[in-house]
Length: 496
Image 1 (cartoon, rainbow, N blue to C red):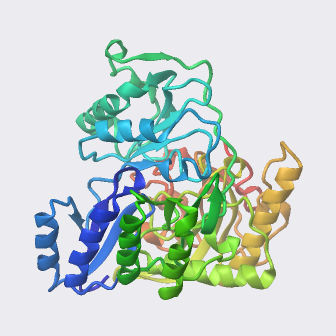
Image 2 (image 1 turned 180 degrees about the vertical axis):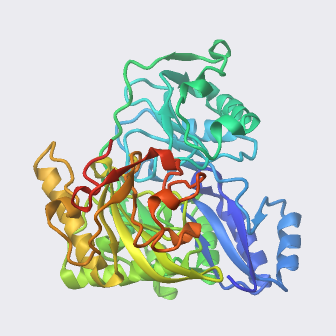
Image 3 (image 1 turned 180 degrees about the horizontal axis):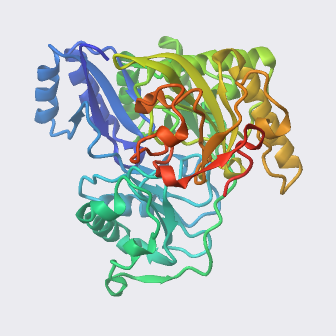
């Protein structure tokens, strides 16, 4: 945002102390801030005018709050704790176990760490670099998935790790990866076991995993409004604009303190959840929402979008698509729709809409086209498996998105059916006829010489053979050598 700092404050595991948040919000108010946001990794994002930034930073330093300015060197440690005792049942992973691990993770990691229950899909499991997933039937043991930094490479260790060693091993893995960037950072890793061989198993409590972990199917619960759980209530608050008024949040923190609610939670859906509301206090919470005119019960097809942080273009596109889906009366239950406008960003999604510029002039993008990609089995915890349609204009985006959603429901009803990309179903009248295309064998991104790759300064009309030797896939960074030639009618059939 021009003329502003973005100050990021991590709330480890998405757990927020009302007292600490109140202090932060009070300091932000003194610096003229009226609204704040919550990010995809359960952190707080505050935009402060440049001339008022120094005062706010002084206040945060006085409060001993760690923060970053226009940076994300220390990614937040993400957890599924917000879903605990709300969306997760019949699990050994309790509040105490989460907090024990988070307390042990007392460093400021430079890699993204995710700590997830296997019995949920509310929070992403594999969007981190170091991803811990609780073994479903073996208490206190964890599966470990590594996604190497700035790559699309994910590897599962064939050992499970005991709870007490999760934090220690996380630190060692981070140290190994940063000590060998030539092997593990910013290029596709062919041999994930090369990392695991550098770990001394003898100093950790591990046991062989009987088989690779089966990731759960995606099922997004409705996470907004008042909901009863056992003999108490939880409240989910979502904001269409992503902006939470500071006046509202300050009163919310005060009400937490008044009613002895010891914590609130930030979710990966840029919303907040307050758990443990007593029946006698429900009216106080209702009055808080009324006083600040906080709208509740948004349509489900709005709640299941994921957009990048601090991305007005993605937010505008989300608003556009929600309106179009409402007009089409489209059902989106069970689907997570992601919007990606920046190269190499990681978006949790069953169906991903990828925007790319057709032309760049003096670094500015003009005339965008869109691809629609589907995750393997439409599970957002898996990698992108199929390109459904590519190089379409915004005019056709909503109808093509609806078609992709319909394929999801057809697949649900016909188990084992592969996703059929649009190119395989019928010739697209909207796409330019091309005799030869080149496709990445890893993520199925298609290079079309008619469009080039403006994000990487490749002009339209540049033949594949003319691409520089160092050219890499804009989606997964695979080298040029990992592309293969296809005909337009054969584009994006199935993942390799």
